Image 1: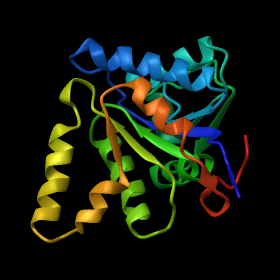
Image 2 (image 1 turned 135 degrees about the vertical axis):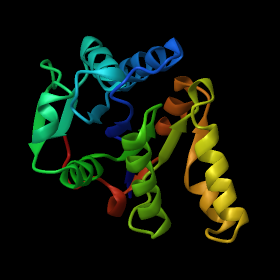
Image 3 (image 1 turned 60 degrees about the horizontal axis):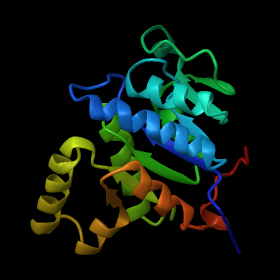
Length: 195
């Protein structure tokens, strides 16, 4: 049995980046997730690309659930119009909760935290702990160094060639939404909590 994706975790930066294309993509993605009737799960902050994606989803009438560790509430200033904000005790718990709440993952541009979140869910998929879609948006070439590292790891024998297929890389939001729309989630890979 399968069902359509109902919630999407978006990993992205607490900064907007140097190229305006990153913020444009964040706004487009937030609105598209809301318009598709999916719940946006994200890091809870009101700054950077996190703030852009959340505001766009809220403005489009969507459900937005933020998950943020307590110490970051003073730095990333949670967006105050969320459907729900969950405050955790640690970064580790934040990532675990985002994973539990999401049926799929989309990575937008970001920094070390964005890479950390992406690599963790990719590793879990490699280990067959889940089969949830992982989509990386390559906005303005942001993902190219990450993909080159992944290819190098495979070429040097530290990962199987098949591991490259555990993620889907797309150039824009429209392609990402098309993948989400045709990616059923098995019951065993579904989020434990329906939103």
